[in-house]
Every structure is written in structure tokens, then in C-alpha cells.
Image 1 (spheres, rainbow, N blue to C red):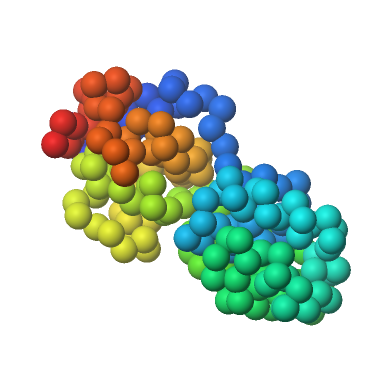
Image 2: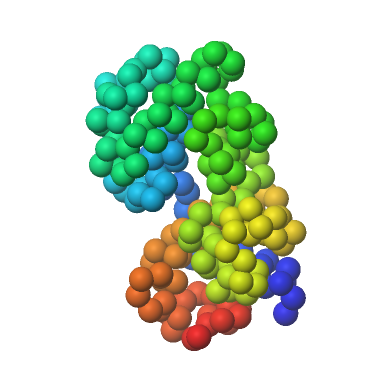
Length: 211
């Protein structure tokens, strides 16, 4: 089985197993997802979803958040860790949205990368979830699982994993595929406990099952 064949088989099996998988960060506006994905660095999505409720209650618009002090943002988002750097990036990002983009989140990948605190993973998430465009989100689940499945060989650098997956994953499947990897990585192919290979829907196609 080639890597391409294995990838397509895994995509189909995960689609059956997690038909409704989507982004695990709660949001109802593109700018809110920008904020949440920045806070999610080295923090769980579940904690971020709790913390942003207070942040968005106090600053219900991107303009209001752009006008907030870094210190006040930091006080609210501190439970997510790295409070000062995250608050600084969020403040600068919201300011830039209003100064250069009329308050709108750009739908161009390179423009997203210009925003403070936005890297390739965040930009891909926005492109896929907000704008419905092709995206590969190489978070920790994605990187760990595609190495285990044998889709990439010992590659840990997010950008290199992303580039490898672009060659294997159909563009229209990328975003949902990455969301399903998160669900599978939490439920079955876990990191901190032994993966449940015996009950895994991918056991017949996973290159490294049982290792």
C-alpha cells in the first residue's frame, strides 16, 4: 500500500468513525477564532472555551478588544498560560485588523500570517473553518498520528509535515481530516497512555499498529 493509498483509506475510515468532527474551539465570528487559537498554544481547547467567555463578555467586538489594555486582557487570559505574550499578540492583532483590514479577518493565507501571533497552524485553521478553503492544520495530534500511521517518516517540524500532507490529502478533505485526527488522538490513539490499537478503526491500515 502506497502512502497515498493509505492516506485515502484513513480519510474514509475516520470519516465513518467521526462524521461530525469539527473545530473544538467555540466561536461565532472569525475574529473570535483568531483569539481562541492564540490562547490554545500550550493550553487545552476546553480551558480556552471557558476563559474566552469572560473575555468576550467584557469585549464583545473586535474593536472593543483592540481598545482594551494589554494588562486587562492578560488578567483575563492568564489561566491559559503565557498570559503576557498572548495578551500582547491579541491586542496587536485586533489593532491591525482595524487599522489595515477594516475590522475584517482576511481570507488570504499570506495576509493572515502578517497578523501578530498568527502562524501557519492558526492561518490554516482560519482558512479551513471560517472560509471553507483547503487547509492542513498540523497541531500536535496531527503530527503524532500521521507519523504513527506511516504517512510521514519521523518528521516532527509542523511546516514539513504540512508540506508532506499536501501531497497526500485531497485539498477538499484537509480541514476535516485534521479535525478528525484530533478526535481520534484524544479517544483512541492517545499520547499519554497506550493507544487502544485493538479497538482502533484504522488497525488494518495503520503502518505502526501495535508498536
